[in-house]
Amino acid sequence: MKILVIYAYPNTDSYNYAIFQTLTQNFQAHHDIQVLDLYQEKFNPVLYFDQTQKRRDLQFQQETARYRNQLLWAEHLIFIFPIWWGGMPAILKGYIDRVFSKGFAYDYKGVIPVGHLQNKTAWIITTHDTPTLYVRFFQQDYGKVLKRQVLKMCGIRPVKHYSMPFLRNKNAQQRQKFLHFIQEKAQNL
Image (cartoon, rainbow, N blue to C red; front, side, top):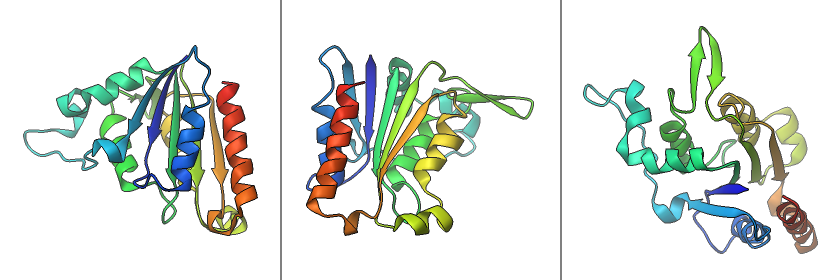
């Protein structure tokens, strides 16, 4: 399987990086893996358009062509990121805005969105520091937004979301248990 791992966390001394390492070190040998570390690449998240660069032409921008080609190449996408202020890191949001463009990732047939990235699956792996009950009843989790309003709209199905909630309150054993869970998922993909 062709797997694209999209990682968005700036610190290599972190639990998110431990998730990333656990995942990428436990894939079966027959998989073909590409890693996109948005911070290491210094991905430019700023979406811009003006009189000469039209929004409708984002699908043709040379600056993002390599990222579009990675998406076309992949059969399975894995996103790893923290939930900050109820949303994904700005660098990942900018990646979505600039790369998952209309005409490339989706179009509309009348008012109905039609995804162009079909026959792909995805996992979303998130962490956050918010207590689970607060997230469930008061705050929207952007991992769910990415799943429902971006990936599914673009034709990517099924999408599974794995989350480590209330990370700041987890002990070493609980953190290790989640890493073991990720290890098993990677080995069984």
